[in-house]
Amino acid sequence: MARDKYSAVWISHSSINDFLQCPRAYFLKNIYKDRSTGNKIQIITPSLSLGSTIHEVIESLSTIPTDTRFNNSLVLKFDQIWENYSGKKGGFKDLAEEHKYKERGKTMLRRVMDHPGPLSNLAVKIKENLPYFWLSEEENIILCGKIDWLEYLKGEDSIHIIDFKTSKKEETNESLQLPIYHLLVARCQKRPVSKASYWYLDFSDTPKEQFLPDVLTTESKLLEIGRK
Image (tube, rainbow, N blue to C red; front, side, top):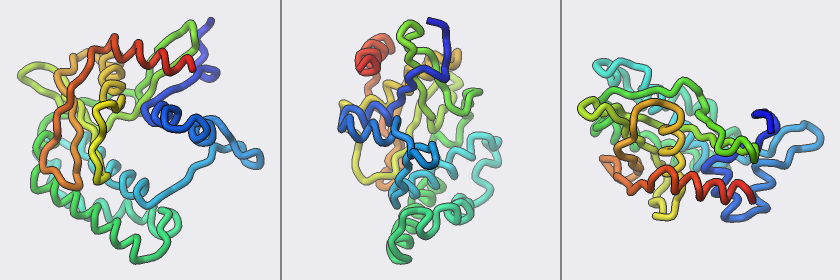
């Protein structure tokens, strides 16, 4: 089959997670389109608005030189971006609920400013805004994913994958998120991955390193899911 990314099945951590939890939810979020607009359905929630704002603030740091990266307050940046999610736009039922989530976000960013850790180091940027590669050309399946942060480990000339978490719960050991990112990074840039971590910004000052299966094991598992 000729490569055609427009007719291919695109899979990601979020779409796979939807499918494994509820195939109906997967269909509604990833395939179904509103007949009147032709657009997919998007449901905004306070948690999603908080996560989107925090991620946008932190990810903007990667293009700033390390010696000036924290010269400006992340909380002020947060306030500016939050305007895009304020009120009904962010799924908030009232001002009290919005204030609660907004203060949580500011607390997370103060934590980052007080304990920048790996964010003070060099970062690697993948050229594509949404990294992807052909998981199977024959079966027309593409794997994609937006990766939060790639810390460059100069001494090893390798990569540390970091995913920022704004929820109050930790990921389970069965989560495919970091293994998927490991596979994407391995296929979309030249340096090896030496480790991967979740950073739970709500309650942790440092990233928490996770076990990574080898990329071939992950690739095989994803192909099995993608074929369904």
